[in-house]
Image (cartoon, rainbow over the protein chains, first blue to last red):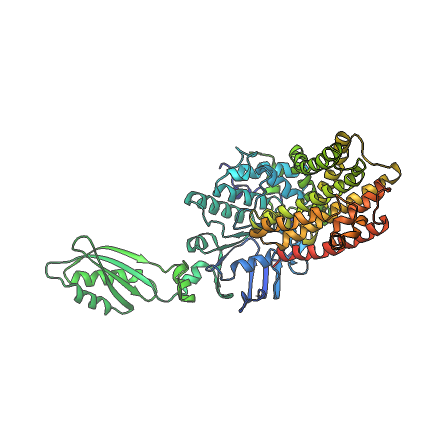
Length: 345
Length: 276
């Protein structure tokens, strides 16, 4: 794509002031949702803020409360308690006003199958009161940006999952929402389509659109989000930048070492020596299926890099040779497992 | 790709101000979408709504009377009833089926539920649009009637009242469809249609004048419960007053009353499906 969102930001001719004048795109206070006949709350008092221009990731397993939260913020689900404000508009008190300023890209294809791709965009804009000439120009521009310009007359049923996804994003952008909600956008997409999506989200952010994205994909959350909220059982467990969340993990920084044994070496005693280094929490000897090399995973406190030299020295002293070291950083998945006690998938 | 700088500003700026825009204009835009889609398939739509009344008219109004099994003036009974049938049934089918599909399978309705207008207004638009289809279906019965029967009962003096009654009938059908489309689970819609449509067609006084049912009392009571009866009888009174019929005033009052009740129930069902 020749022209991206981010490339045209600098020559934006004085963007209009925010409609609500505030710095927060989304404000959520003590949000509670209990569905009729449900034994427990689907949301048990969730509070968070999303800053203007931020990409905010909502991470949690299925049934954690992500979709309920997004449903409330997009006016499709009525909260049992609490307050939710999108771009300065209270979604409960003024759902019609809220729908003007938010855009939704749902998990499932909800394109109008009776209309062509271009007509989907045009009619959506007409629902939002975009004048005809302007919506025609916008539709052509968005179709181009989302790689859909070659088949504007095609029906949604004739397109792939990735293309459907792009159409839904393009459609949601037709009324220039202040906040764009993407619900599990990469579910079912092939890797190329996923990368395209990530690229588009980055461009949206660069253009100043606030994006709230739900996912159960750790890589996606880490790659896209400025901040990540981890939610499970209707409770917000953590909220921070991906880097801070990961840094907050005290353990699980690792060195994976591959060692070529010397003529007299003994793996068990080397393991014991490594375990004796100050700051080392645990040493596991990993199975090395091929060859005679030893592999150790060493868990350390704090940063892993300072341990490389002492480890190399110990290995050398044992008459062996360190041939490879891989530093392992904890990732969001580790954070999630730490917080919830279970894996995501 | 366009290089027009104004386009780029509009696309790039999420805060570009929109002109003032009321919910009713959004409602009209949604109606325009429905008219656009139906207009594109208008011949198919006509074939869809005409076929059943056409055959009823032909077999009961033409074949049976020509063979001598029905009296010639049966046409006076049948024609207004078939106009009512076409309007009510088309109205019903134009809300029920799309709603079942849009809420359960295609989710198509979501884009309209997320448009800046009250959720209930989306339901009202559905009913208004379905009623338009119902009205067209009722109206095309007139040229078909003239073609098959040679002439149809019509009095210029009651023309406006006939139109109003047809509109009421179309709205009644659309409101019944709103209830079916929002309360019936998608896996039951086939069964429900069979169980609802057939009794609705044959107890709506479209093929017989209701006051003549005195000697089949139970059937008269059942027919009195069917909202379509008041449309059939109302049109009969307006178009062929010599046929026994329920007083036109009563027909209007009961039809309006039914419409209000059905709309309240249907709107409740719609809101339940649209919001959780």
